Image 1 (cartoon, rainbow, N blue to C red):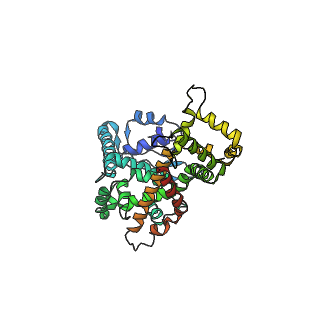
Image 2: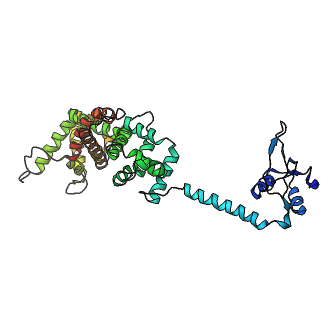
Amino acid sequence: MNGLQGCKFSSKVLDECFELGIVLPGVEVETIDVVAQTMLASKWYFNEWATVVVVNELSRIKMRLVVSQPLEECNLERAKKTVEESEEKKAVQSKKRIKELRILDGKSAQNLSIFLGSFRLPYEEIKNIILEVDEEKLSESLIQNLVKNLPEQKELNALAELKDEYNDLAEPEQFGVVMSSVKMLRSRLNGILFKLTFEEHVNNIKPDIMAVTLACEEMKKSESFSKLLELVLFLGNYMNSGSRNAQSLGFNISFLCKIRDTKSTDQKTTLLHFLAEICEENYRDILKFPDELQHVESASKVSAQTLKSNLDSMNNQIQRLENDIENFPKTQDEHDKFVEKMSISFLHVFVGDLSALIVWLSI
């Protein structure tokens, strides 16, 4: 025993001794590991725990030795078995702490866990942010990910039945229980997302809308362009003399694109050339029309089909939001400000113009 007096032990060796039920004589815990070999060579088995005393400000620890019997007379395997059993017990306890899913499938729960881990907000706080439509805390990313990973309504209804077992549920299902109390949750989220992205959508299509609108206004107000159309109509009626199209009162605007394709019998002159010559000789004021149509070039680059598709989509979302607000159930929850905050007044600035443009693009 005295051979161990004054030996120095690392914290690692000390931990191993505690696991095996070994206590050490009055020695200081330092950073030397050789004592482990000394201990085994001495063949002493120490089966009672030590009394730990902090002896000074350096926090060095001394142990009091309690000796039972030589190592040969004790069952070393029993000591190892004790350690193994302890480890197995810890493993079983760890497994018990992993809560099994009751409603959600593994993939859905995993995706929801990733979402919750990325935002790190208490479940009740997320719920209240949505109820209050708190735009200072709401973000497009939050709502988009929530819409993407939110359990189906059927699953939310099933989770709502488990609210009394909340503490026994896995975290994704606990979140589902909290959110299941929000009325019209998915419609609410879609409406909030539309509100958050509305300005961005408008800014994306506004230049095209403005270009088309201004070009239309310029064409209607341009006197020189109006005279040019009269001249084209006159030439058309002259060329169609004796046919059923003679003396027409108007023509389709798309016909203007065909003027350059209409050629003389010798194929050397087009109707466009002939029209330009007439204007040069007799109607020079008509040639000023390009100066009165400054936005036509930019408007010509706008895809009418794409613009109409975007406007139709926004119009459908507006109508859906109007219906949701009209049919929204009454609530006593003071936090629920969906109807108040989602007033469609923020849409009215553009709705009139959108409707007019949709009609115009449909012509």
